[in-house]
Length: 484
Image (cartoon, rainbow, N blue to C red; front, side, top):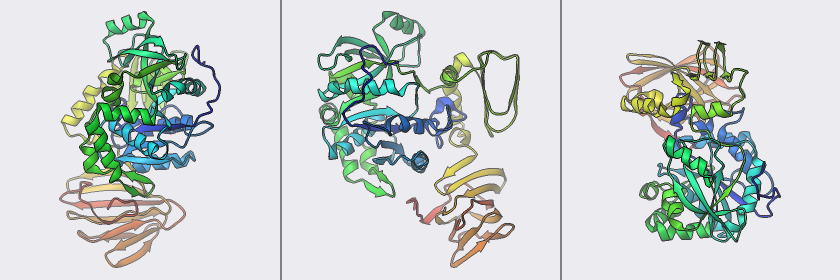
């Protein structure tokens, strides 16, 4: 349902969505990990959170093709997911290093402003849930006059409970330029439980959804005024950017020199030209397992269960089993998340403390913090099957037309066994094809490449042997994906 004061009419303008797809999603570990984070995962439907966001903002009347900002590790995953839903982005900007949201938003705004300085931009995180997109669209239309008048408009959610995981916005008087919008009196950080209850009871505080609507011209002018050095660094990163396949890769040195700061701290809380529009759109920040439990369909006992599970005597629990049978008996308000290589059991009301687990994994240098056993690559995927002293076994799946880089290793040799499909092998000066039940040997130091010339996926077992088997023992000599 649209919020009071918002007329649910189509906007005559063209809004330019900027979708931020950075971050590691550590609060949804072990399903979400740094190399394959929550926004790229199907947590609420058959589509990923990114795909859901793009579908809300990247198709239909009133929206231009989106600008996506992501990091280098995820660029091919993002591109593939956009192709799956048949959305061609305006561009995909690659952050060479994470610098928080202000440099990312600035880069996207500069790209859009180069074509249209007066463009209206809707900045959206890629990992939120919106039950009623029409209400969001109506709010964007109602806030557009304020954005054109120079305000940076935030979207506020009426709180229905004291929530310590969200920031808050205090509303002021209504704007003359847009009656549905209010001046922002102040932004508040995530409160403790007592202060959260007070804020909710006040009636004039809203949750900060993280969505922003602004004119490119006005936002960039405020950025220059408030953060001139950051603005200069980002402009330099764009000036020295290079085209990389379907992506624009920001210059690494210039972008890394930009101050790492959120757009809230850099601009919103300092500008004096912020507004907020209350909107009821069924919004949730998919930031924890408890938030997923809140919005997911439940059985009669309040349980959310997916995967192969046996649940007896459970109440208000969340179970997700991705790899094997999960059985649970007599539990209440507990969440169980099972993956191939990690199991998490956590009380539902302590989901925010999951960061302690992730911090411990980081301190111990555990790979489970960063990646799943199955790692996606632009050519397909690989999965560790077994490992021991001086050996490692992987299963590779190469998509039709997929081609690994021409590479060599300094510390390991490899044996390849084709399970199904056709493998085209380059080994130094030799090029030859293998089919099911055939194998080959790649000696240490040999320049080699694997590709799939067939029309079906190539399944292959790779046995590595040597004194060091890390992924950084790769020297790429040539690569169609621009990684050499």
